[in-house]
Image (tube, protein in one colour):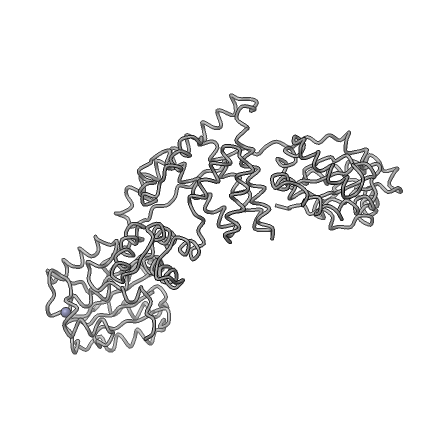
Length: 577
Ligand SMILES: [Zn+2]
């Protein structure tokens, strides 16, 4: 016996079995009961919301000999034939594959003949927006002079692509996305009927992941069941959906909020060890952060969206974390997500993120120019609150319009930090004595050096690179200025680096940290000021290729070329966005 997908087996056969479209089922049942049938209906809405199921139930209900209270009996020959798809008078057309004028002309020719077996001939045209212009014109002609006892049901996910002339001749129904709690109760029902065991949490994960589509929810459920054990487990649901365990996310945010960098890094490691995708992790974090912001404004709304999955740790975090911190976290997440798109070392960026997030939480007391900062914070909060109020209002209106609850868009207005100061008096002596040999020697041991460091130290140094070295000094560039600052301030880290270099090279060079984005300018300025020395080993790596030497080009270029010849182009890898 071949396996049948859940969404096929459990396709609703009565109006009452259709999930989450109460308004539409009521209206259609009434139409059947009172025999007030229109010639054409438009079923518009996202995929998997029950449009074609509803169309077939309607086709049965209008033709059933024993319909009760507007519902088809599903027992008579007519009902059975329609369910099986063998009823000649109920014609399903997939416009995605039959978009030609000919097919619609065919309808026009045949529509004239009265139904042979049933009372009503019903044409169900799925994905009707795919019809060609010619086909729409042919359809319009039919709708303008509809024969008796013919019903057209046009289903579409993209109603805006349908000509207004067609829409105006239909009775329109907008199908809503299925609420998570509705698909949850449907899944629960099906599993109970099948006698399968399940974790509540697993179903919640599936309901959230399917984003309003019942068909998707059941497809995911299918996969989770096929993972075996005849039980729907949370682990398997997380595996199939790729979602990160919410509890872990809350733990992680709590840890960075408490500046527990080490613990937070372990949590990241645990998440990565479970095979989670780093990008998915940051996405889930953004969602959690927004849920926290929303919860601070309107707890009952989050409780509704999360299907009562709001636990005490979440509440605790929502109470102690300030909105400002949440905005900062979202800013950081946005930045990191941008960076991660261009790297194959996403896990390193998660470590960077962790150090950065934990670092933020120290800032508030050190802020200078407090009054100005306060104003910008207040402004932003006010605009956020008004945005959230709007979102709330929309959400409360949602059932009527068929719109789905959207997470509030969080406005990004955080001012960027100022450029970091680099102590040139420490940089220039190293540049003055730099050689390619020293740099190569340092580059050779760099990854070994990183392996000697502790995990938190490595996460600070993870995206750093040596860019110049002399016998007794080296310049290390950091992709992130905030990490460069951290490295400067971290005496333990500096000791560890010195000890490590001593072990690996038997030398203890003085290390100077610079932000990568300032390195090209530092180097250029140095070369301009020390042109006399250009014949010597001036010992620097070139800036990235796009840095563009405006002005003094002809004078400095030989120097740059000399440096390039010495150090090559691949030494620094400046992120260009
Ligand atoms: Zn029947």
